[in-house]
Amino acid sequence: MTLTRKMLSAMGIEQEKIDQIIESHADTVNGLKEKASELQKQAERIPGLEKQIEELKAAQPTEDWESKYKELKSEYEDFRQKVDDERATQEKSRLYRAMLREVGVDEKRFNSIMKLTDLSEIKVEDGKIEDAESVKKSIADEWGDFIVQKSVHGAPVDDPPANAGSKMSKDEIMSIKDTRERQKAIADNIELFQS
Image (cartoon, rainbow, N blue to C red; front, side, top):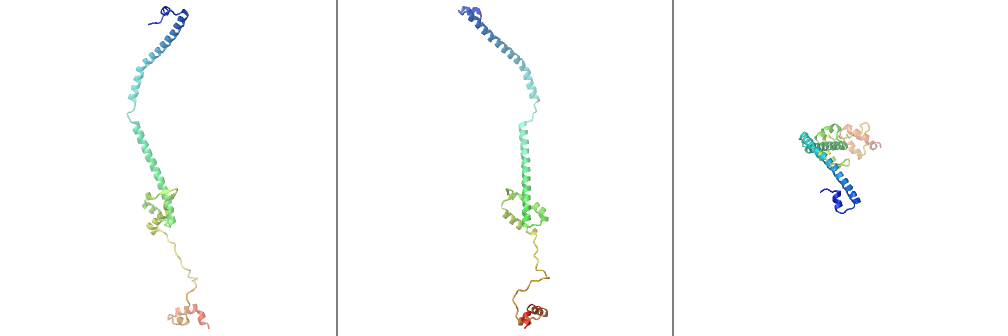
C-alpha cells in the first residue's frame, strides 16, 4: 500500500501536516532506494569475488605451513641447545685445565688427559667447579703418574753440614780399624787428643 495525499486527507489530517508527512516519507523512500542501489551493486560484484577466491584457493600451496613452522622451530631449539652445550663444555674444560695445573700435572699431558676425561659429570656453578676438593683428589688419584715431582736436593757437597751428632770417646776412635775413618774421627774430635 502506497502512502498518498488522498489517503491522508481521507484520514482527516490537515493539509500542512500531510505535506510534512509526505516530505518525510519521500526522504525515507529515497534513502532506502539509494541503499538498495548500493546493495545491488555489491551483489553484482559477488560472482567476481567468488571467482577470485576460487583462484586464490587453487593457487595456494599445498604445504602445511604450521608443521613446517614447528619443524623449523624444533631445528632452531636443537641448534641453540647444541651451542649452549658447547659453551658449557668449553667452560668445564677451561676450569678442569686450571685444576690440573693446581694439582701439579705436567702441562704437556693436558691435551691427552682432556681427550680421556668425561666432563659430563663435572658440574659448574657461578664459574667454579662444584665439590672442587673431591675433583682434585680424583685428579691426583687418576693422573698421579703425570704430576711433576719437585726434586729435593741435599746439602751441597762443598759445604757439608757440621756433625752435631754424639761425640765419640778416645777409646772408641782408636778402636776403628779403617785408617781413613779413624783419622777422620780424630779430626772431628781433635779436642780429645790435645791434652
